[in-house]
Amino acid sequence: MYDFLTGIIKTIAVNYIGIDVNGVGFRVFTPNPYEYEQGDQTIIFTEQIVRDNEISLYGFKKVEDRNLFKKLLNVSGIGPKSALAIIAGGDRDGLVAAVENGQAAYLTKFPGIGSKTAQQIVLDLKGKLGDFTKDSPLPNELLANSAALDDALAALIALGFSAKDVFKIGKKLADAGQLKTDAYIQKGLKLLTK
Image (cartoon, rainbow, N blue to C red; front, side):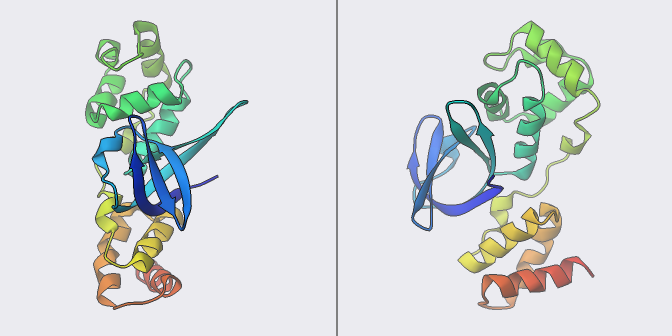
């Protein structure tokens, strides 16, 4: 399983991007491939879906969007494509409010979501989306000019530290100068565990 990929965007298609990670190209299905630009270095937080006839990667700019994607997959009748379409709407706060207030009609505006599925989303997720009410900083804001620093910041997030906390120490790490990834991680751990 892949938690995140750090690499360069090589291809952009209608429903996926191709990201080059040290010479290996990964096809990653995303809510909006056109929010990326070819040649950009980025971090993509991924979720791997394994089925009988395929293995697919789904990727997101924010950890919160990936977590919401995973929650949506737990709803009966919602598959990866439907969950991706809901997240592509870009209205996380509206979605959370609709679920919490039992407004199934609001959810039918998303592609492929009928009234029964909308009611199922409310039934399965009501009271379980409290973590998604406030935006955290974009993980892409963590990106710096140094690939080693980018990798270190992504690793700290992967270790379970919040993107918000990692973002706070990102500037301090950048001010430390050019270091190797493991040195950035060690400094970051010291700062985060004070």
